[in-house]
Amino acid sequence: MKALCWVGADALSLQTVPDPQLIDPEDMIVKVTRTVTCGSDLHLLAGYVPSVERGDVIGHEFVGEVVEVGPQVRNHRPGDRVVVSSFIACGRCWYCHQGLFSCCDNTNTCPAIAEALWGFAPGGCFGSSRAMGGNAGSHAEFVRVPFADVGAVRIPDGVSDERAVFASDAVSTGWTGADLGGVTGGDVVAVWGAGAVGQMAARAAELLGAGQVIIVDRFDYRLEAAACMLGCETLNYDRDDVPGELLDRSGGRGPDVCIEAVGIQAHSSWPDPVYDQVKRQLRLQGDRPTAVREAIQSCRKGGSVFVLGGFAGVVDKFPLGALMNKSLTVRGAQMHAPRYLPMLLERMERGEIVTEYLATHTLPLDDGPYGYELFKNKKDGCIRTVFVP
Amino acid sequence: MSQLSKVRLGVAVTMTAAAARMALDGVDAARRRATSGPPARRGAARDVHTLTVTVPPEQLLPGAPALAPLDRFGDAVQVTVRPAPADRGSQVHVRLVGPDAGDGRGGQDAASAVRAALREVRALAEIGFVPSPDRPTTTWPTTTWPTPDAPPRATTSHRQDGGRR
Image (cartoon, rainbow over all chains, first blue to last red; front, side, top):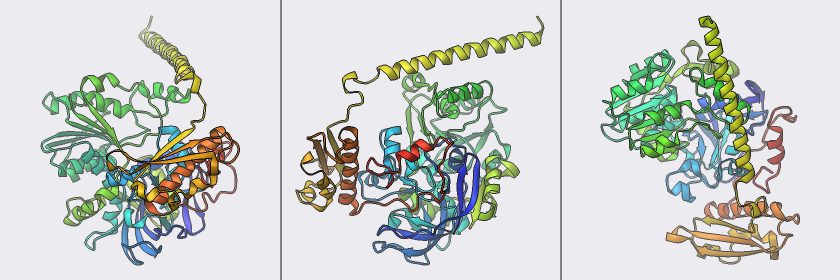
């Protein structure tokens, strides 16, 4: 089959790879019908994430049609249209029982790297590094889906593939941030990053009852999309004094909940980029936490900061003093999609969550490298590129 | 001094100060690395390994299928199963009792082998099988040199310590 493979830093190539096969009894093979670029792919693509190998198939946000099921798959049959959680969960370990599906104890088949990096290994993920299990990704014609009954959900007839595909990751991740960030009725919520995850975090905050949602980015076309499609207030950090504006707009109190949806490659203004880059080259810092710093600084006393952006290593100048003295709660997570997917699909069916506008470019998989070039360099108003294998 | 020269001087001073600060940070980080942790135990392999499994102790009695991964260690390990606090399943304790535990290489290798076996115990108890990685792991026939992934690839080329088989 055809698949889009990582072949080196900032290099992708369409390759012919073996078709996936059923291996474990709860596996399912899905014919991919839509698969999406994601910001976390960019961290991977640029070589920021350790233990990716040449030839690895990338991609983790997808929908498709079931073509084959293992003997212990109960909820799906060939022909079903399904959306699949980007993270793989067994559904039976302690973490899955707590609803922390991305922390699953049993689905990372290569846990030693993550244990060395982070103390414990998260669950497996499609199309990521070996620290996340090294499962083949979805930018391919077919993909093997382990623990199909847990991670895959049948798409209701009233929801199109074009809408449902974002439930696989962006919508689930955004909901995770707003829900676990503790958004409640009337809250002022600030979201850093107006990519698909940031916009879906903002939408989740609105649906959870936030009274005011403010989204921060530097690309006007993304801010305009958030304002137009979600009704958010916007701030462009190239022009606006973000902490000052957040203070003013929240009546001098600061946002109740701050959600960071940016991650490792956060952009910032002089002189921070030089400082952070030198620290990174000297191996004194792995990630760039610009937005996290600003979120902690801006959050009201006793508020909540949620880190949704992808990080892999250590950071410098983490404002621990602000965290402690302002009584903040800082929390982070990969997404726990199986906890939310059925509810999100219902909301999609009712029209409460609309995602089609995020797919600014739809291309055949053969154009994968070009699709990532558009996405990475924010060309042609790109929010997300969707591939049709 | 012209305005431009003042700016240049300011930038130079700032950069020098930043470089000095980073150098100090580097020294500090190296010092922390050199002195952190209990010195007597540094680098030593643990001889007791514990994992909590979300099934009751009755399912982990001696001879239970889920404990099979520990059989390969024979008399080199002592296995104890206790109820986890608050009905949260069972705690499986494995004590290495000899230097030749596991694959015969002892030390860190044995500890890694025991940890890998405990993960298999947990998987067998909780889901009934040990999940398999995708095959093949990569379709690229070459090594990854000179990218920095060569060392991780070597590390993960075997599964006894958690990497891929």
